[in-house]
Amino acid sequence: MKRLSILFGLLLFECLFSCSPAGKKQPTEDIKTLDTTISIAGDWLSEDYFNSIKEFGSPRKAQDGALFITIPNRTLEPTMMIYNFHEGASSLTILLNDDTYEIWGVYDDTIAELHHKIKTISQNNIKIGDRSFVKINPVMGDRHRLILEDVLFQGNYTNSDSQVVTFSKTGVLAGLDSLHFYSPPIDYFDAGMQVDQVALGKSRKSMELFGFEFSGDTLKLFELNCLTWEKPDWCVEVENGRLVYTLWKTRI
Image 1 (spheres, rainbow, N blue to C red):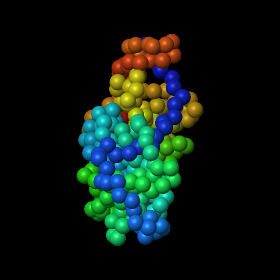
Image 2: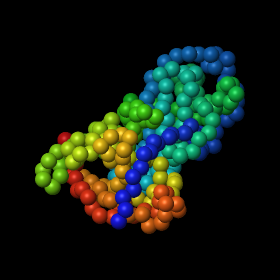
Image 3: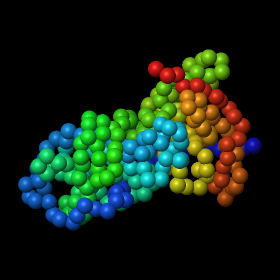
């Protein structure tokens, strides 16, 4: 049985919606030059992805079709749409047209194409085109927002000895032997990602991947078995191996 050690970072790329754009008309000069605050600023995750994470606890299962956008505090500022947490495309900006926020594509520093209108449903719910989004509150890590830490892992757990184990939304881990940090990959469109995984380590620079499974409030962590090696140090097919930890999440 071999353990897989990894030093990894998760890169999120700029992306556009998979939906068809709303039109190619140019914005009028009054909305094109209007710099104003945005009342719905923040981080927004597609509702179907959010609900799947809450129900099944599996980023791998939920990834296909996932959307994420950070809406800036002001119009005319650059922003991005993350598609499947994997692919990238051109940059976006948000304009205010009368009382409606609109997402426009930016090409060669020119606001060129209307992609979608944004409809505010509530303080924590919006629609962009025909997709529903929920507001989340992830912290910013070294290179990306810690989304799964916020919506899936964070909280207090107990182990079989009734000891408290804490996963914080900042990626800090407490109470699990000598492990002090955790980082769950969010992109599974690659080799060696056949099961849900999370990296655990004594430091952020030295982490090892484990498989994980959520079943209700129960979190199981497994050693990873490599089934196929492409190179001596590159595993392209894995499965969950020996069960290492079983934790039970504490309901507040």
